[in-house]
Image 1 (cartoon, one colour):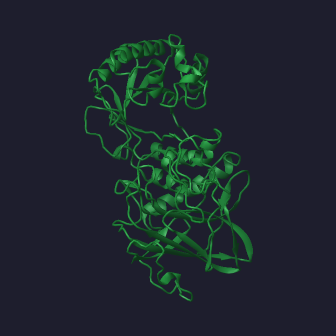
Image 2: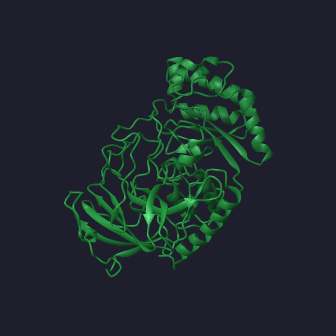
Image 3: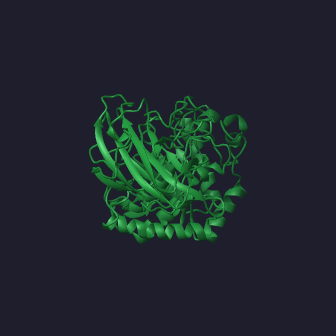
Length: 484
């Protein structure tokens, strides 16, 4: 797939995981919060560099400074921006640069208050004099024009003399599996259809800040492999569409046609090469939902409206729109930077989504169902026991309510040190359902009160996922063939 850069992020608030000969105390267990005592030796990192070089991959390590450095502060009792901290860090960088044959050193420099305006200039000047190029997050430090900016927020490329890498809205730890492939495939990296000397490309990132039970969970809970393929397609072919779009285009228009063609290739790759590698993505371009609404609920999320009434023929009713996909966003929690289906979403409203699926016989089947696929980097509160989410969303199959899972952590307050276990539809057991012979009616209720979450770790995700699935060959699930 020609992914040719590996960005390696081994220093964080949780722990410092690079062996430094001059300062062995950096990697002592007592200075780590999680996975204590685990770090990369000089041999480990040299092996990584060799492994990458043999595959024509550029190895880009990041030593985060002066932010994301609580482990440094715990070790030395000083802030990096202090006189003593700066002296120690210069020794670390000098040792690191002289030990490893690498062209770039990423300095981080994001999400921190700069109290020493000389800090970034001094550090970048040191690194440049040692023969390395520098990369820093943008927005971030007060860089010179030689330092490449890696975009992580919606702000763009203001400095015409600087070079840029685009990672805006490309964080896999915030993406739902089905949405990730759509939004990455749709992107115009660096807001352009082809690269230039100043617009260098993009990078997808996996910052799983929440503790996991095992490293394998990083691949089951985040859409790593399907997103890698979508990113390879977009970054090497160029093109894409303006903005950050999380919904599939109409089947008869250019955007929808392009995605369906790509999805066919993606599913072929999944079946050929990922049978025994975690690949949380299934075909969704053949699922079409008829939407009805908006209904004013006046802040009462349980208020029923006519689509819930018995003996209503949804097929004979005129929808507001027909929307394609297995995951549908009415409003993204980063709206308007990320665009869902509704161009002008309203608070205190309820929508309904309807589709019908044909089955040749009565059968017990399975569905991926979800209403709030947790980010793997936030301490999000678990749903109230007996609910799908905290918006009172609901789903029916042939008029029968589909009950939510029995949450393992139901009612619990979010905690980054408590691993996720069943909060996402792609890594918990699919919901067992009974399909009947003939047409099966799926109805989804989507109420919302307001768009302001109680805090940044609990955003309002106005969305749903509903896809009939079956066990494919190997370890993954596949979507049922849909006729609707």
